[in-house]
Amino acid sequence: MAQPANLKKLARERMERTGESYTTARKNILTDKPEGPKAVRAAAARNYAKEARDARAAEKTGKKPKPAPAPAPSPSPAEELPEYPAPTDVVQYDAGLWHRVLTQAGVTNPATGEPMSEALLAGLAGGIGFMVFTFEYEEVTTATIVTRAHPEPYTQNLLTRSGAKVNERTTGSAQRAAEYLDHALDAGRAVVVRVAVGALPWIESSEVDEAETIDLAIVGEHEDDLLVDDGSGSLMPISPSDLAAARAKRKKEKHWQAWIPSRRSPKLETLTANVLEAITETNGRLLGTAELKGIPVHFANRFGIAGMHTWAERLRDTSTKKGWTQIFADPQRLSAGLAQLHGFMTDTRFGGFGGLRGLYADFLDECAELPGLEPLAEHAADYAQLSADWIDLSEMIDPDVDPEVRSELFERMADQMERIAQAEERAATALAGTLATLNPAG
Image 1 (spheres, helix red, strand yellow):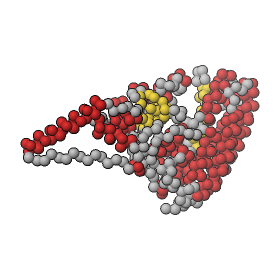
Image 2 (cartoon, helix red, strand yellow):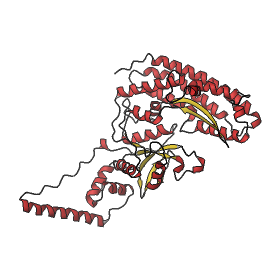
Image 3 (cartoon, helix red, strand yellow):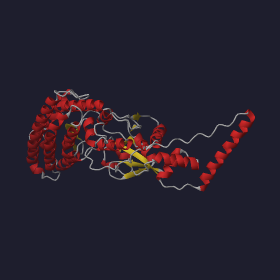
Image 4 (tube, one colour):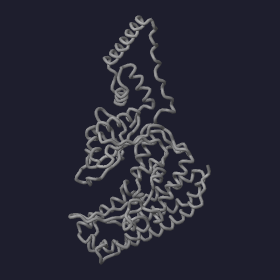
């Protein structure tokens, strides 16, 4: 959302002229509302009345009235917040969202002095992973595939490892939540809130799962509405009451919100250590050498490279109830399941272009600019190639396939999945070897 570079200064000056509160003055500047002569006269009258009271008090006490306080100093150019950027070429939704929020807050990568990129934030969040599940319901069989880091808390890892100062709040009170939101917006900061997707006014609730949630950035106000960045490229207006209802639908972390109160950026050595921690954890999850927190042991073979091999086996299985040929024997379930699978692999929430491997290659390249981590660049090419392999797999998925030849389709998908699994293991094993030798310079 475009806003004056010196918005704080303009708001303070308008407050002084009109007597408006900071919030009202800021809102009126952003909406180009002219200063009414009535408001200016009222402010002058208040100042005159205050001066008269001070003079009378001075006569009674014999003390001179206190001089009027000097106006608050205007913020220096270094203190002004950058404009909130529009989403461009987003590959991973949450990393892209926080890239925009952190950019607007003035947080930078200490190695480059530039905003923290989507690739860097995605890698710090955990980067890549793998999980696949099918669930059979009365009328439909779902197919879920996740190619981002999972099951660790993606956004929480991103925020913690970014090294930025983050204000997080949860409350059971809708009124208190609105007050927290207003406080952050008054400071000129975008605020990220967590909502139920189906409760958003522009979403058809029948098309989404009731439990599905999404993080949105509230970037400002327009008239009586709030302006929402939902990654679509356009700011969506939403009334405060509709936003409150969408936030209240969350059963867990009700009314959660987070914002960046300062431009404090991570120290170089902190970011370097956090990058190593993130890569080590991601590599361990893929190779199966690190424990999956909160996942029962008997489900572990659905995750990481082991999960890729498991899926390939079930794609090839034509005779048992666990095989995809049997699971998707019904034509309608087949079409819906493959459409959902393709959606997961091409959206930006839980998957993404090239299984997010290309974004991870960019992350490794960027991390190589940190002290002592130069060897990471050698591994970027492996993940760039894997991105092409994942694209090939996604292009095989055909929701309109003839049910009579579904086994042949699944066989081709299994072959490609095995090739990917083998390449993933080679890449992760090589990266593990480099991680064992790294000694970041301070």
